[in-house]
Length: 414
Image 1: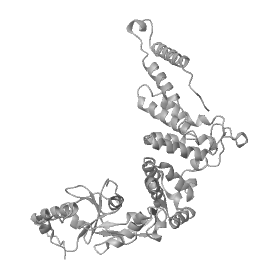
Image 2: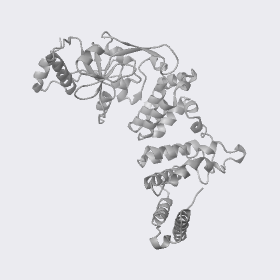
Image 3: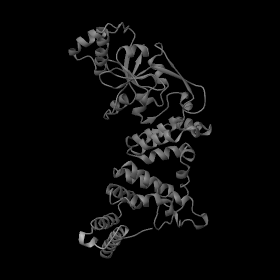
Image 4: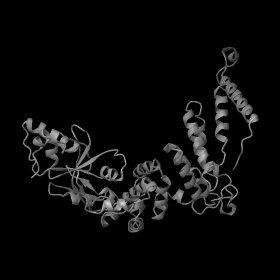
């Protein structure tokens, strides 16, 4: 029988109790001292998911999530936990403010990622809760003594560097396509790959039309996180491998197979070039805004007349929003710097040209500095009114940029 929690708290100095056991004990003792009757004989708390996975991989643990078995929502509230879950009972611990969720089961009743009914009861076991998770490496837990609970082979899959689904229930939730692709991007540097059988289930989800039920907000939530990973290109490559890219990002999917002039793009394929450029941007630790700009910078090439391929005249017109961002350079120079980094990724995201000189960054930076330094003194403003002042400043800025251009002959490439 588990040690009574107040006793566990009192005996914490023996070093056998973990932080989460102590925090639960603290909350329970506070509730009992307040005169609340609580039956703690069956309540158990487990560390689950990413914290367990990352500890086994030797990675820093970013956040900790907990599953509570053998109790009810009402009982947790009496213990001081704050309910925050909208669709299922999730609570913030009264001391640590970490998330604690009641163990649950899910059953598919309709299409899409919202088509589920969820069961919460003290009788739901930890193994049943873990079974509903996406990947085996995310379906492990630790008890209050730090013992590993691994009913679905997650530790073995970590060793094998394999992203594998927990059960056939994987096909019921189309969001798992995005999550698996994101985990593939996160752990690509460690040698992880999606298991063949899991990739086959992802293709089944797409073929069943479930990927079309994903709403833009959910897609962007996962995409934004994937773009921030060390290998964001793997996210899109994985989506393409299972057929989801053509549904979720058809504009990006359309770039694969579109040829480019080999003189400027030895890799030829536009889709391959975009992935190479995204790889370069990530290697430079570019912010997500830059990575997204790199991802979308050549979308127009899939829309140019096929008769003109591999040339893509006027595809730059689809980059007008980026040019408009450039107009903010004087008051937001960091955005201009991000734009230059996206351009550099475009230039170096080409086979054999990863380390090619790119003097345009320094050149354009000098042009911006010269233009930003232009001012009109009080005497120079005399005789000018309203728009005339702005026009004179613009004229002088153009002259300053022209002077920088005259002093430099940067290499240029289409």
